[in-house]
Image (cartoon, rainbow, N blue to C red):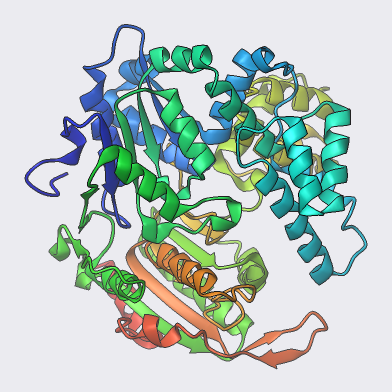
Amino acid sequence: MNQGTLDPAYSPAANLLAIAPPGCGKTELLARRAVHLLGGLQPHQRILALTFSNRAKQNLRERLLRALGPQRFARHVRVTNFHGHAAEIIRAHGRTLGLDPNTPMPGRSTLAGAISAFTDGMDVGPAINRKKAIEAALSAAKQGPYDDDEVREALTASGNTYAQQIEAERIEAGIFHFEDLLRHAQRLLRVEKVARLYQLHYGAVLVDEFQDMSPQQLEIALASSATNRTFVGDPLQGIFSWAGAKPAEVERRLREICGKPQRLSLSYRSSPAVLDVVNHVAAELGDVTDLRAVQPDAWPQGGAAAAAGFNSGAEEAGWIVDRATEILAAFPKATVGVITRSGWRRKYVDAAFSDAGHLNCQRWDLAIEDSSMVQRLVVTVAKLPRQADMETLRGVVLGGIDPCDVDTMEQAASALSEFESLATRAGSLAAAASQLRVVDEDSAIEPGVHLLNAHTGKGQQFDWVFMPGFESWHIPDSRAETTEQLEEELRVVLVMVSRARHGIVITRARSLISKAGRPYPTRESQWWPLVIEPCLMNANTLVRHISTLATY
C-alpha cells in the first residue's frame, strides 16, 4: 500500500484515525498496522480487532491471518464483533455488578420474539410502526452505562408502555436482550480494576468501520486498550444511524483523540468505469476526493458501468439472470452480487434465480445457504451415528460454538431450524445433508451469484454488482423524509455501487405487481439521472462487453 510519502500503517502515532473511501485498502491497512504493532506488544499481550458483522469479521480475520501467518495470528490476535466482546466481558466479570455470567448470551431474535407478542395479528404497516417505536424506546434507554433501574426510569419517561412491559418481563425472566450486552460491558469497563485487566491484556485495538459505531461502542473500544488504538472507516459509508450509529459525533471524538486523520485516495478494488459512478455519487454528498484506480490499464476495456430500464420487475430479473449466466460461463470463479435497497424489492430476482438451477446462488438472508454454516452442518452430520436425531445435531452444533460468539450462535440456530424442515422432507439428517451444496472455498464470498440487501453487503465486494429497483419508494426508502434521512439513503446508494470491482449495472422496472396481484406503474428514483450519467453502456452494449471479456 502506498497512499503517500508515509504509509499510515507504520505511523508512530499511538492513536491513529484513517479515512478510507470504498476500495482504498482499509482492511489491508489494518493488517499491515497489526504487523507493525506486534513488535511493541508486551509479553502475553494481544491485539483486539473489532468489527460488526460475521462476514466483516471473516474478511478481517482472513487478511490478518495472511499478513501475520497462522502461528503469530493465533498467539497475538483476537478478532470479534462488538457484541461478542461485550459478552466475553460479562462472562468474565459480570459478578462485579451482580450479573449472572452463566445467563445465556442473546442474539437479535430474543428481543424480536418479545416484540412479536405486541405486533402479531396486526396489519403490516401498523405492526412495523409499533415495532420501530418499541425498538427505538428500548435502544435509547440502553445507549449508556445504565443499570436496570435507570433503564426502567428512561422507559417510563418515554411513555412507551409496550417497551416498559417487555423490559419488565425480561428482568422477571432473568435474561438478557441483545443491547443489554453493550450497556453491561460499558458499565463493567467503567470499573477501574476491570478496565485495567483488559488494558494489560490488549496492547492494541483495531476498529474496522468506525463510522458504524455508537458512542457507547466507541467507549468500549477505547476502554479495552489504553494505547495503540487504530480506527479505520469512511463517514460517507455511515448507513446505520437507525441502529444507534452516530458517524459525525464519533468522528469528532476520534479527531480529538487521534488528531488529523490520514486519508487514502487510491482504489485497489474497482475499475475506472465503476469509480466514475462512485465519484459521481460521492460528489453529490459533498466529497471532493476523486478516486482513481491504482492500475487503470489492468481492467479489460476499463471495466463496465451500465444502466437499463425494463417494462416489468420480472423482465428485469430475467435479464439479470441471463447476464449472470454469461458472466459465470466465461469466468466460473466470478462473484456476482445482486443488491437491492430492501428485501421486498428482491422478490422478482429471488424467483428468477430460484428457477435458474444451472447457477450457484446464495441468499444471504438464509442461514442455511451460508457456506460456513453448510460446512459445519455437513461435517457434523457425517460424524454422528446414523440414528442420531435433530436434537442431538442441535446440541453438538451449538455446543461447538463459543457461547460469547452471539452472532454465530444465532446464525447456527437459524440454520438448524431451516435444516430441520429440510430433514423432515428428506426423511433423515444424512439425506438432508446430501442436498446441501458444500463449496471448497476459503473465502468470505464464494464464486457464483449472491442475493442480498444493501446493509447486509456493507464491507463486501463482488466482481459484478447488479442493482435492480432504482425506483421511487424503494430508492430512497419510502420512510426517508428529513434531509438527514435522505442523505443517509444516498450514502446507501454509494455503499451499493462501491461493492463492484469490474462492473456495476443499475436497472429499474416501469411496472411492478401489487400484493393484490395487479400491475402498477413506478416512477424512476430521484437519483436515477445522477447515477446513469456516468454509465456509458446500455443493455445492448453491456451484452457485447461481456461477450468480449473471455478474449482478455
